[in-house]
Length: 195
Image 1 (tube, rainbow, N blue to C red):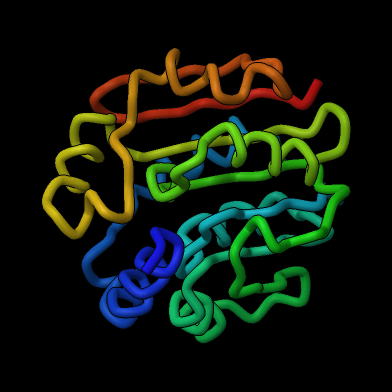
Image 2: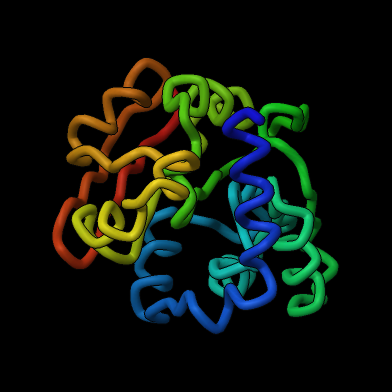
């Protein structure tokens, strides 16, 4: 079984209890979406969206469209039960099979460690975005806490440790002008605009 299939199966199993076990600070979500610079009328892709932790904040910025993409069909099913907004489209798919382009912004919240090939991910996001479009990789905790959660035999099969934000940003610099780096015990962000 390859890493993608193992990741899908893990999150399918976790989906039912995800919202009870994975809580998010609303102030941090607001800060992340504010820094993602989502504007009224924008097209936004939320990659590895899970059950929709960022959806409410993103939708409050009045985008024309929000596409939530997740590998786990059960995570997408849970999101469908929670959100009923005509601007929201949900897709259970491997991101690399998604052919859509023309997005103004792309967010990856609490999912980045589960993408094994970071440069391939950066290139794919660049392909999806318009020129000047913004990518936002974000965690509402610091890398030490995230890495601690991803220790152990099962988690190590489906994730890779977060490196310092400055290092991780190198995966994106070929396609993006990185202008936000935050690497504190409370927050981890990498963001920039497509060249």
